[in-house]
Amino acid sequence: MTATSPRLKHEVKDLALAPLGRQRIDWAGREMPVLKQIRDRFEKEKPFAGLRLVACAHVTTETAHLAIALKAGGADAVLIASNPLSTQDDVAACLVTDYEIPVFAIKGEDAETYSRHVQIALDHRPNIIIDDGSDVVADLVKNRQHQIADLIGTTEETTTGIVRLRAMLKDGVLTFPAMNVNDADTKHFFDNRYGTGQSTLDGIIRATNILLAGKTIVVAGYGWCGKGTALRARGLGANVIVTEIDPIKAIEAVMDGFRVLPMSEAAPQGDLFITVTGNKHVVRGEHFDLMKDGAIVCNSGHFDIELDLKYLASQAKEIKTVRPFTEQYILNSGKSVIVLGEGRLVNLAAAEGHPSAVMDMSFANQALAVEYLVKNKGQLAPGLYSIPTEVDQEIARLKLQALGIYIDSLTADQVEYINSWQSGT
Ligand code: ADE
Image (cartoon, rainbow, N blue to C red; front, side, top):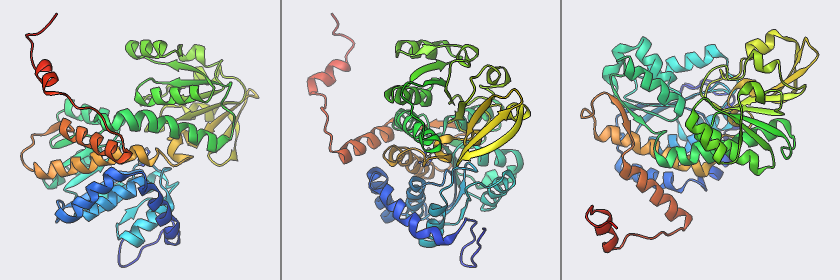
């Protein structure tokens, strides 16, 4: 399964998958015009010449475009998976074969392999780390303090990673600059909401082929990912219940027209449960015990901790794979609970992750965040940095342009008005 060529070290499933990967990467490129423009500029300007870069990301057709753009900019880049189940093996093969990018990622890799790939990435002695979930950065901070001197900075893709970086900041161990890509408007408004919304339902449908119209779907968490998931579930005709722990988000869900309940009340009602909270054991023993026979549970949050599957397994007399990424837990009570994608991100395990059109903006942010770190090398104090508003706005402008959509601009009179406090009633 693992291939190593003397020309280029890598661990991918099968290099023979490269032509399929090439075809799919090219297809994704049709929806990624913003990143393409950035790549063309990087190709000319080579902003990353001489720099070692590690990207820990879901190895998808969209990530391929990011890796290719960074390499075009001169980076000596290594790519590893940010999740054991999200790798697209054909994409990994193509990046090695056609683009000479070392990739260490195999769909279904075990925990030991996943951790070993993190070590291989850190052995590259990165100047820049692009992380998705903060596993590489956390390992660096925990185990390789001596390498922090090599580091210009890091970028973080996802909410879970930002939560971890904030915890590092609080503990005084974030001793380098980290760019918060997740919180850019052109990232989370689109990727987290519409990307997660569509791809989560895509994963559920591919895994189960069930009709969603008329089903009761319980969405745990009403952050941006939960909002998108609930919105799309309703669009497919489901009756959606939202669970929350944040009172403000709960009111938002109510005013968006959803029923809001505690999980203990939602548990007996749901046909399908989707967790998108970023926290652990959101669905646990007390909830599994109340579910209907045949209830389906899945997760679209970053880590596989949202469903307490250890509890479920402890109650099961048999666990049967009934379709790809679909396991039936037959419980001692006689009831069954169906688990999708082993409780890992269902949108990437059972489908292909967010569509390219939203990843275009997310990865434009990543590419420009890396460039920002390099341009400001040595000038940024340790800490967590927002993507500059001008960069966020520029990405939106380029996206609109690519979509052929034009918007108004302020008149001189309006500019004067909004800059003045003197005119009122
Ligand atoms: N995260 C969610 N969807 C993704 C995709 N298509 N590519 C990379 N990372 C993702």
